[in-house]
Image (cartoon, rainbow, N blue to C red; front, side, top):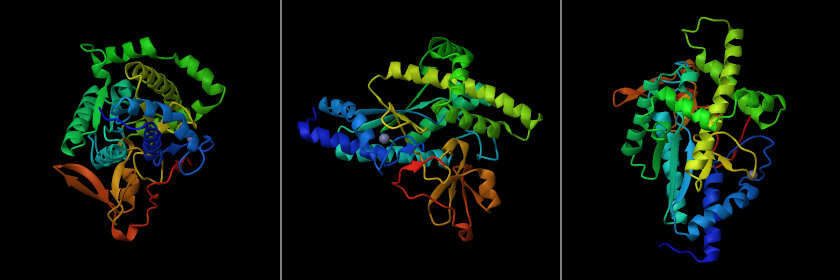
Length: 333
Ligand SMILES: [Zn+2]
């Protein structure tokens, strides 16, 4: 068994959490301070040190990579492309850096939540299945040995897709009325609710949508409550199934709480995720995430790889897209 002296364990635990917090996604007013938040380090230190004392591989859990947005103005298509690949490579490199500090290393289990929500987003179950399958293939292709994927399909074997969602919400979900009351009271959930509503309006504003803008807003506010309810149910289920894992999230979280918000890519808009946008080569060999339509309006051209759309490349003259420096903690705007 790998063993560290007590003081070394303490130092290694701090160093491992620092590696994660370098990429922390923060909410303005979250309480985090400094480039690397000391209070967040202190909050997660004991759990990491405990795992290290036992010589165990550190386990991280990240609900993410659900399915591509159905909106063709944002993404190149329904399957994972370079946007996902860059994010997976980033997660793998994060694990490699942790293994340099602590040789038994770390693993990140990606808990793909596509099946949890897809009916609300207007995405078919087949699309979710193909997306998840391609993520697994991508993990293999890029040799990301520290990453794995877990989906709702594995929780209730034999159940059909609608039944999976029904069983999840029946066993773990809050009622949307509870969430409505929580949003009315204000607090952290309001940001989430507004963010999700905004995203859903964007995602469902497809060329096929025929209704009014106001009706779409109304519909998306209702859907947002359902998304949050399902998300909480998924979250609780994961906590039950993986009690010892450190929880990562693509959303910002307040200082010193159970989850660490993580940025998957350098992008001027921290709300963009690889599955809501397109990887764009800014012309100087660096990549950022942009909505497809915005990048194309700036003159970006499509690049294909292995016979599929991969990413966009901007002409050099446009290579002034603001790309945030790696290593800075990013505040929500
Ligand atoms: Zn903090």
